[in-house]
Image 1: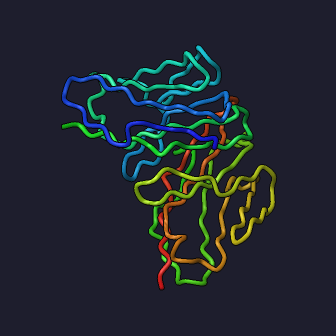
Image 2: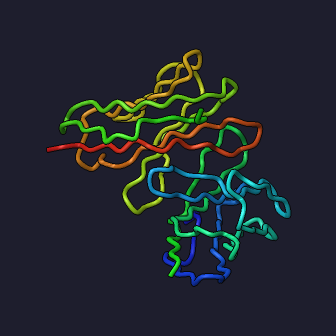
Length: 113
Length: 111
């Protein structure tokens, strides 16, 4: 079955630590996205990529980094510069045109300890 | 002004009634509109999309789009307790494929 897989489901980060969230899709989608969801604030775009080896900042990119070395993979690193990283992180993919909806992964819940 | 606005709710409707969820957007150039359902602690799932003015029906769901007034709505007929969730409106507002989401409306269907 085609889909989009995020791991881990739960992640705990210590102060000053970088952590990487994994996102893999086998839908042959060109575009991939990372969103952050906080209670009452909806989904906010962190980074997106419309093609391999290219990505753009979203609305809240500070403290995050990404790479897109393969079409199937779009990992997100939450760096120590992100001061309030506790949130629900959602990865999504689409075929990459304006008419396309997203397929979401199951999400990673990150907590600072 | 937020690009995509929704009333956060909760919207409470009795079982069997029609639930009406509304969304307004600011970019007149928007072309694609989506409704996602999100259960608590889960990821969003696409339930409807609409591109043209008018109504689009799929089972118990009807999406309505009015580009002149810049609003899109979702009607859920014969509401069931399993419809209780947060409904996110999403709009393609630019030249890229990315979507802008509203903050969502929480729907509660009561017995």
